[in-house]
Image 1 (tube, rainbow, N blue to C red):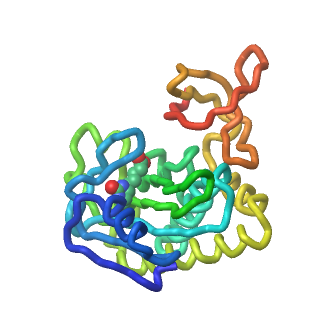
Image 2 (tube, helix red, strand yellow):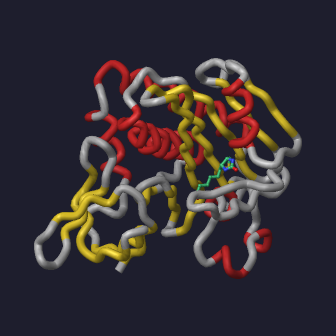
Amino acid sequence: IGRSVYFFESVTSTQKVAKEYAMNGAKHGTLIVADEQTEGRGRMVRKWYSPKGTGIWASFILRPDIQIQHAPQLTLLSAVAVVQAIKKVTHITPEIKWPNDILISGRKVCGILTELQAEEDRIQSVILGIGINVNQDKNDFSAEIIKKATSLKIELGKTVNRSSLIQSLCYYIEQLLHLYISEGFTPIKSLWETYAVSIGKRISARTVKGTFDGVALGINNEGVLLLKQDNGDIVEIISADIDFA
Ligand code: BTN
């Protein structure tokens, strides 16, 4: 992972660039990274604020030999990799909020966006987009965003070296992919669960089918969140925004 790296000073979105590279045959592990994104994208067609020189705006092209329905497992795997990389470089252990937000002191420090390119039911490539707020100061965030977001610098009180963090990220993604290929999702799932904050808590999951309230029980083998409603029914949450009750 990260043996071929393409660095850009400014792009619309590394996801977009990575998709083009993937279509032109870029190898597994190719990394697209930019100093600034002018049209950074988050999940659910939201914008991802990606100012120059402060964050890690990166997209990895992966070509895993897995079935398409297992693709969400890669999002969870990468959340674990981000936690381990941040822990290694800053000695702070962030928490994971299902499915893919990385939090420090309850505020979002990193978001992950996984997009698939598939033909029939074969995966052509997975574009794994990772945005980490690294060296922003408090006043770099708008009043609205600072309520929910933070950066490593704000939490640590000092600047963090972005190259060390990217290197560490490549290392952990590679290690975890090896573990995943050799032993399956079970060891990844238990790592994920050790870092997850939502498990055992009362949450509110906003989905396209409406809002579901209940206790988050954990995730299943496909990375689906299991929510126990007050009437005892267990619902499977595939995609949602989670609020803590
Ligand atoms: C989210 O939490 O909504 C996901 C945010 C993902 C942001 C990253 S930054 C690098 C890559 N390029 C993008 O446009 N988005 C992802």
